[in-house]
Image 1 (cartoon, rainbow, N blue to C red):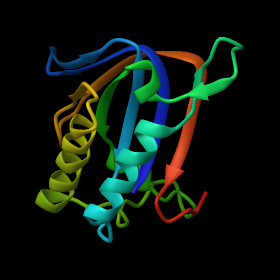
Image 2: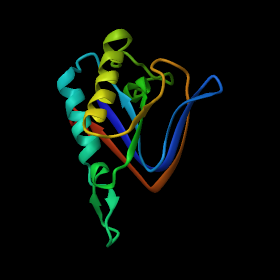
Image 3: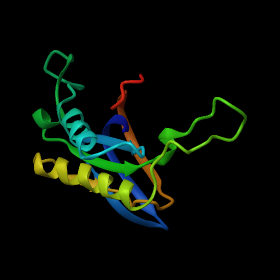
Image 4: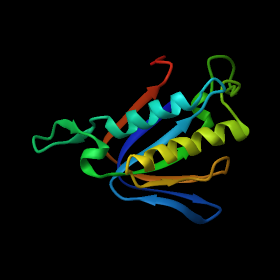
Length: 149
């Protein structure tokens, strides 16, 4: 599972001119799922998203988590996180999961965040989406369950 976590003042996702998800302060999270991912990786992602200490404390040090600040999450599926452009000019997406299995894990991450008490808005799985955010900091963190980076 690959996760791009962006600290945000606000974020929204639009599908065909309709806003389908929006948040205030918190995180915009782009989620890529591979065919080898399982509910264990979904649980790992939920834990990381909730507990990353990337919000400032009174001293302006990144010491507080999403749970500490009561922030929200906008979760957006993004298979292109598994794009491989090392060869040629057109990325290959063969390492990205597709279909019902990927959607089930995406839904599991959203449900896991909600179980942690986090307000979680979502995009629409598999749709062409326009994502807007006000990146705060900017702070952007890359996570990979296989620890390739």
